[in-house]
Image (cartoon, rainbow, N blue to C red; front, top):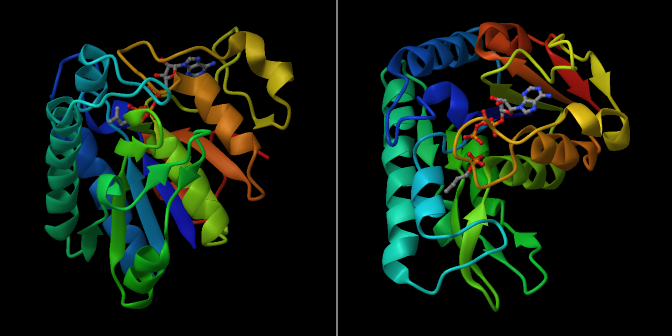
Length: 246
Ligand SMILES: Nc1ncnc2c1ncn2[C@@H]1O[C@H](COP(=O)(O)OP(=O)(O)OP(=O)(O)O)[C@@H](O)[C@H]1O
Ligand SMILES: C=C(C)CCOP(=O)(O)O
């Protein structure tokens, strides 16, 4: 089973609020449809926010730890993410990918200590029935804090652990994690060894950019790859492009 994240920075123009990168999304959908056509089974897709969600979250002062009790704020963030989710589903459905949505706001929550609780029975059943579940970063209820953001990266980690994923892929706007000379780092197995080169996102981002990604992936059992859109087809075909995190 593969858990694939389509980074918001890939499928949107991250520095222009609520602007899709239609060409990039089409290329990603082409690669996914081709891989399924070629025999790939059991694919779970998660997408990030990019210019949808992060701007709304930032405007309302909401992050993974700072919450809101204002339903209008929560719905502005959730609404933006659902709009992006509709674009992603549409592009996949147009290519006969049996994509169906899972909206974390209605499914997941955080405990008082911030731990993410995400039931996955619906995702498993969707997979068993031949669907391709498509989740997304979202706003979720958080005990004691109202509602906070859950990043696509956190959902990937939770799904991969719960569903015992064989492979994890994060398709981002960079060809991998870059070192201080902008060369792709082949393998990362220790956060401290690369902490100096790991930054936040260049655009508005409330969930931690590359540093957050690497930290989350290092905590997982399965190996994960971070790569660019040009390498998505290769990843889905079984290669390990970009940076491997284990
Ligand atoms: N060492 C690094 N190597 C590569 N990218 C880095 C590094 N440090 C910081 N970054 C930034 O991290 C960004 C990728 O993280 P970001 O969270 O924006 O990706 P994403 O998951 O594709 O998008 P989203 O969070 O919207 O879903 C890159 O675009 C770059 O600006
Ligand atoms: C900001 C929101 C709502 C989603 C964040 O998900 P990410 O882009 O995967 O970090």
